[in-house]
Image 1 (cartoon, rainbow, N blue to C red):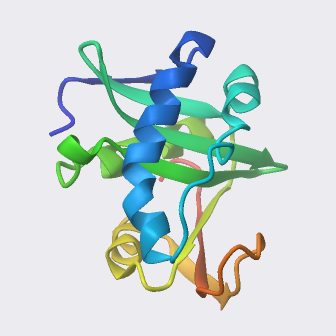
Image 2: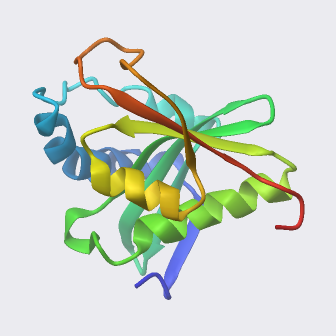
Image 3: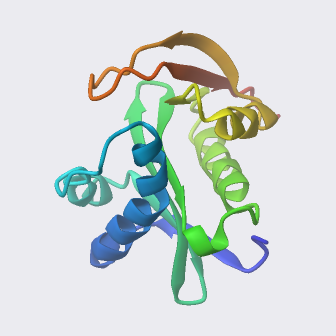
Length: 160
């Protein structure tokens, strides 16, 4: 479980670890979409780490999860939530989502948002369990595949 985990902003020295973790976590998802991860798919990670937009979950010395975020006025977008394949189904993704929610609340940010492929029903259920609601369905903005996405939001209230 997530009892002994530390959660903090990823450091520039962790770029390789973040990239490897996300690739191992997302390759099965991308293949289900009928694609392969391009070598440059995560080329934006270095800049995101430098701007404080990627968080890492570490167990001892092992990175077991990461969340890449983007920010808009009053909103944190959960771009990618990845857990090491050997540590999946242990509550780490749930724990990381709660950690980011706490960060958002501490900064008076009132909205978390994300999207996932509609066919990834287990992920949709996970996000619903955390209070996210579906606000729309539609094609992905990137146009790399035709799988419908589920766009979800969670409104945060003060003190909740």
